[in-house]
Image (cartoon, rainbow, N blue to C red):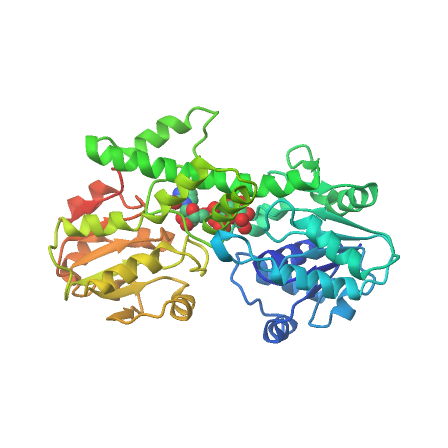
Length: 435
Ligand code: UGA
């Protein structure tokens, strides 16, 4: 099938490369000329495990092309995916400007009958009907279909998530879209990796409800962690005990400094805003978002136990990315925590295996902030160390070696990643979250 992907961000690029890999002919369109130039040289603008190899393989087989020219992109298109950004707008609402602009341009170049326009950008229920109206106002007399096909890819694991999905959801309203989308995904669908067909509004809501529920699990266990500290219980064991109940499950019950990334914060707020537009109040979802917004504070509270004043204190920060295996720092807890530490006069030396460049672009700091060239260097003369991202590489730390490097003895583990006994045995003070 001929597939057009509009928007080569994280979702568009991964989906495009994977759809090419299962045998479709894919053209990716983007207005960003430098990004397209890079892709045409065979380089990926994002880091995702396994993506570079898959991109090279499918370029070599001639199954994927990249262009800024919508006329080339739309030529022969059977299915058009929109995967452009939908940033947070006023009052937490998703801003659909880029999405509607992409739909307008794609419709202007639509030459085939029965093209299926599919929204993959995360956008609230009702968005596909807005796209449909926009496309209909441009395509006069050609039949076309619309659909919603939310993505559930998780950064760092996106290629695996694409080929082995928990489910593929398609929201459709006619047989043309149903048939084409079923055919598109046939190579990856099986009993274990099913396709769920729903109405369009339902599919749109499945995406928001899923992300909000995962965010809820995180805020829930974080609140339990705070209570654990008060009564002397251990949240790791509480989560283990809860997760053994098959109805609850173990995943997304890791307590820590809160969720980050480009999705949860934005999507949760957009769902609340969608409710408000219908005079509906999402009480639970609002609360989970507030719990997360205040999460940065636990690090400051823990530091205050040991330092009445942070002025001049040298703090090692381990990890800047919002989670391991990515260089993405969008909405990462590190941004707020480092800002607060610098505001209080601390001096920061940070180390992340991948994210220095992205952090530099995003964080406009006005304090004493520097990057360490190596993991060990980040500890030199430091008064305290705070782990914010649980990179595997940090497991190699030998705490005995740090005794000579660090000035202070405080280890704050924002992800409950280190073993308390090991850290304490080396002579350090260990502060986990709810442990
Ligand atoms: C999330 C969803 O997991 C995907 O299914 C979805 O497709 C994607 O958003 C999206 O909407 O595009 P992602 O943002 O890549 O994926 O990251 P997650 O792995 O979900 O982690 C989000 C944040 O939660 C991270 O900061 C992570 O450290 C934190 N987290 C996760 C916890 O604090 N505790 C946990 O138990 C799990």
